[in-house]
Image 1 (cartoon, rainbow, N blue to C red):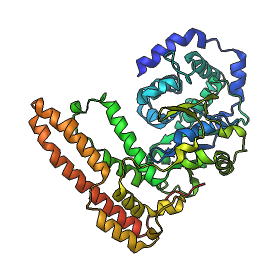
Image 2: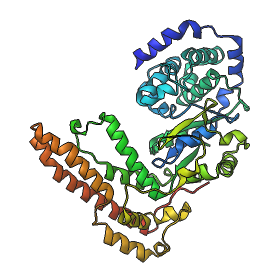
Image 3: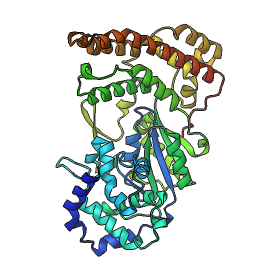
Image 4: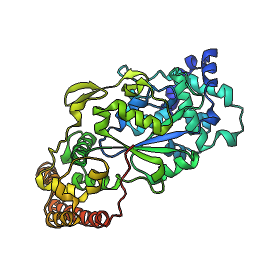
Length: 429
């Protein structure tokens, strides 16, 4: 990673050293020590966290790194704590790109197809400009974790030429995955930090996250499941994730709100007005424009290009769930449907009905489990027989049995917690 960062910096060095007065003057418009407001975005499966980030991209009182390029800030700081602040700022883009392989197109340009990436010389030139201002500060001040967080955001703002509407802009950070330690670090560094969680109709959310996890597994093994060193565990992993990510971080309830995926598509202006008010920002029309660095963010939705709000994408879907699965989810996650205002059967309002449904259905394997089992047996176990890996193949039935028992235990544990009223789901904004 450090060698990659060195090559990138060396290649851009001649251009980046030409620190013109305009860049330094722009850097002076950022009051880095006074940038004390931060908000982080977490996702609940595939629930529009990137769409929400792209809506915030162009607000004049916000500074942010695009996509999820800021996700690794804290991990990087701790892993490379021995580096100076200068070296950290130079190396972070390479680390981010290494951890998130798609982010070469969203941070520093390293290939011709990076639609949103910026030129390395602009980023490194911004580092030079900020150091013209703060480089003589004591090392104890510069090397603080909080300072790195502030500086990497300010550097990126200067690199893309963004003139802040507020010298102390709100820093928008991508935490994405729920992580109590990361949340605690953010609040330690920025005591007024806030948390936004994107959420989705639980039926569609579970269905979509299962599909996404399968895509990631296939991508990770180049679609060669027969060569994977372990069996797929998608069904259980999907339920573990989404049953754990629907509550605020511990102790962060008052500073946490949720944004519904469907609202971002069906009523984006009203949704972003509420969010802007909660964040203490003025509403701007740009809050309904989906961009990175001011460039429209176009994605493929089932093969069709789309940018921003797409009401057709807000419909309930459940191709990976059958009727029994949906009834179990309605019963188990009743509080989610109620608090998040998603439709569910009226009968589920009665606790005893929910208890009966869970008791009857927890023994029945879900469709997600059947899909996973077919892949394990047909794409992983049987090919290993022909390759002479008999022991690996014979382990498949035992593995699937243990995962069935694991999911039964998970449902029973969650049912006890949720039916007793000890589950506090995230409050929508």
